[in-house]
Length: 264
Image (cartoon, rainbow, N blue to C red; front, side, top):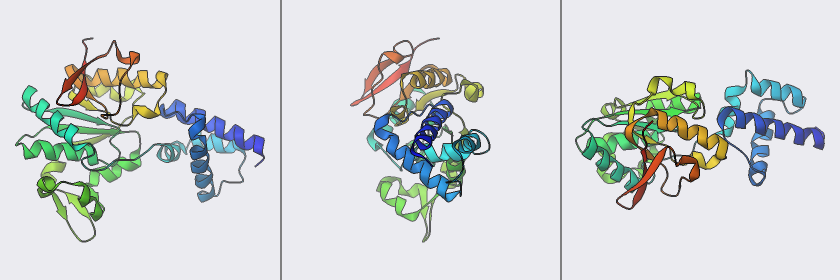
C-alpha cells in the first residue's frame, strides 16, 4: 500500500472508531493505532486489500473486530482497592441494598471485586457490568481467570475465589450478585432500560481516552442511569472539569473525591 493510501486508511479508521466508541487517537498515539491495524490486517489476510475495502469491512461485518481491537481491556482485581473500600462503606451507610453500575468493566474484575468487598461486610447488592466489547463480556460472565491473578486479591478476600491448578474461579454466590450487559457509553439508547437504576456508577480509566465532545455524551448517559443523589466514581487520578458542572457536584469521602448526581 502506498504511503498516501496508508495514511488515508489510518485517518478514516481513526474517524470510524471515534464515531463508534468515542475513543479518540491523537497524533501522539497514532503509531499505536497503526500498529494494531497493521497486525490485525495481516492476521486476517487483508494486508493487500484496498483502503476502501478495509474501511467497508470494519464499518460493516467487521465492526466488532474493530471494537475489540481498539478498546483497552486493562483491568485487574482490586485495582485502587482503598477507593473501592471507601465507596463500599459509603454505599452501606446510604442504602441497605446497593445497586451499582461498572461502566467499562472489561473482563469483570472490577465488579467482582466490589461484590467481594460488600460480601465481606455482610451486604449483598446488585452490580451490572457494562462494556462495548462482547468478547470481554463473554469472559467476564464465566468468572474464570488465570490462576496468577490470585496475586491481585488481598488475603482477606481470597475466601471468595476458588484457586485450582489451571484457573481461578469467582465463587458462585459472588457471581450471582453480578450481571453483564453490552452497551456503548456514548449511545443513550443502550441505557434506556437502566434510567435512574443505580446508587453508584463506576467509570474508572475510561474517559481518559475521550475528547470533550464524547466525554460529555458519556457523562450525560452516566447521569441518566444514576438515582437522585447517586455517586459517580472515577479513578483517583481523574478530575472532571467544566463539562460536568451541570451534572455532578464533587464531594470528598476519606481521601477520595467522588461526584454526586445533580437533579434533573
